[in-house]
Length: 196
Image (cartoon, rainbow, N blue to C red; front, top):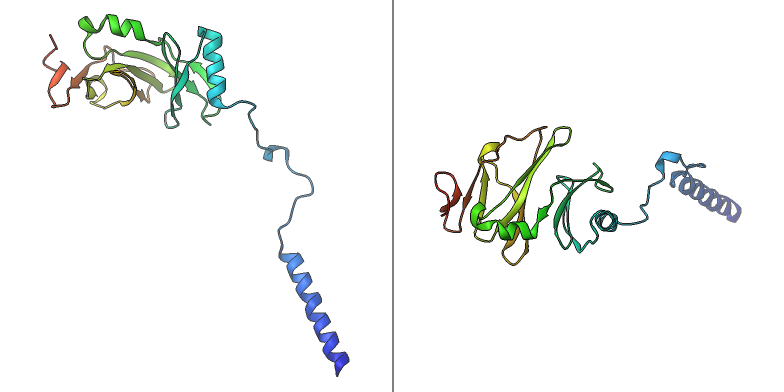
């Protein structure tokens, strides 16, 4: 009786070991070459700042990463540069010119109004950008020439904002026509009125 009981326990134990070994994860003997992840040696922020330093002398910081539009905004002592990255949002692709110049915005504010803008057509196929600076009094911006869309914006410092929008076509409608509203919803630029 003890012998039969011992053989039964041994068979059950052996069956359990075989079950656990066969149901465990399987590992390929040789990993496929395409499955190796590419690990960059520097971060996207560092590589963009290095490109800005090489091209323009210095890089203060990266202000914004926008993964939806694949844009990064980098600042140096002169101004702010929009940078286009690759589709995976991992590598520098190209600078978008012209840059937004701090001194130019400050000097031309009286004749230009509370915002300025640049339009860059055909940054790549079916991708154009409208971007610029805005003062703190420009609370809402509507781009009338592109179907009344409102751009993204972010604060830089002391009464200075950057606003931008990407357009999914080769060319934006020029000239760019905008309406700017203050905090009370009053038009301060564009539309039917222009700030005096």
